[in-house]
Image 1 (cartoon, helix red, strand yellow):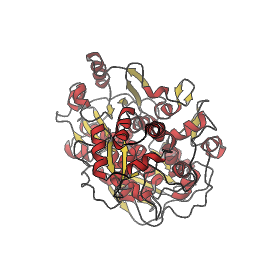
Image 2: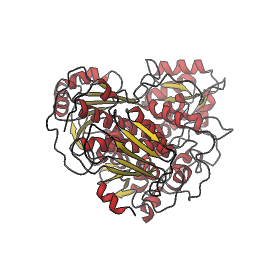
Image 3: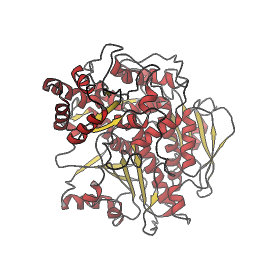
Image 4: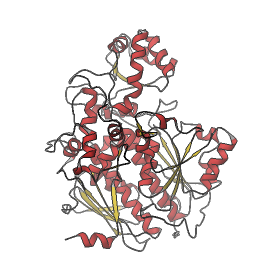
Length: 565
């Protein structure tokens, strides 16, 4: 790996400084990718030219990068990509790749997301591919011509749902009658819509008891509420909403605060958010002086992150999926898990001896068990970090300091480390913050209001769109951090948040019609889709369940030229 002499601060926060990219096309995906590359310091030229036939959603081509030598990266973006089902826009992808089906589970029938969600995800993946390609060239790699598609982004977003559907076919969630009113969100006596969150059954019980709900309704409501992240449905007893509407919002909020339940108002799409940070990934160098690394870790494999080692200590969706994306780019990922392993390994349905949902986010990773609250566990984490390039965690605020494993602690053993925190709210809400979870972020940032059809009250989708997009943004920040570290020799801190995903969806939303006019068939059976030969390039199977494949392909420039007419 070569270290180029340059200012530490600027290339760490803008690691593509000095790079020029030419963008063709005007899809949401290519515009999102161009915006992300600009935020990394890249000059993006747009000349109003149409995309080439083999990249109908756009093309990004690096034209100049004086700080590297060798072939320059590019990324081609399609709609269908390798899928043998014609798609020509966002709504086609949502229909043909299962997004309408999963989003519509909560209301009993397929529904379009009223945001260009798959296109936004594809744009982040495309920017990620270009940045990873630049890092690969800097490290001596050659497979830097990437291709992705909006359909592949959609498949990655649904990988958990596909894994569940294929591991236990025919046992999907019960759907409500079409058009039925749904809760959550809940409504107070003054008409305020609000979302609540807790992972603790006792907090759920105390909250509803405080409001006067019947014990039977409280007990019946907990399983669907707890499982809604996995099922995309949440059929709660009507008695819970009947109790909520008897109280004004301040009283409900006091009950939530007294019982440890997080609560936020479902905001309008125009509700102001704090100014965005200068770097969307909050990239900044460690205060220590840059440390030269003459050789770097030896590349093994073909992915652009081949030879990169990632230590991941994360749970639920955002952190593990971020680590999974880095693994799909070629990195070796090692999970730090508590003694006995991550409890999510045993959550049904099972694919063999391990949870299908867990495998969708964690297959291919190694695991080391360590109790991070103990001295021995901390020493294990420090030992792993000392021989790694990235440390990725999504612990609750303050936990890193309590563990003695914050950025400064790990920089002491690995000064060139990329220390990545995948959080919930960042600066969007003041402390003490509510839980940083998907549906609360949708509600507060106004995304829930963007999703609702005209005439319907705003409600978050129960498809985990924020968790997934937040994971992609986290992985994007890690790749940018690795490039900054490679250019400067400095360690890099990366901080992303689920709220960043909400902000990005808001910023890219166009009222009116990018999602209109689908012609592709609407998929209503994820297991059948995964088994359909037309979708073979999207999914792979271990014999027990199916999972999405990597959302890009990387080839050497000479290989791509041979394929061009």
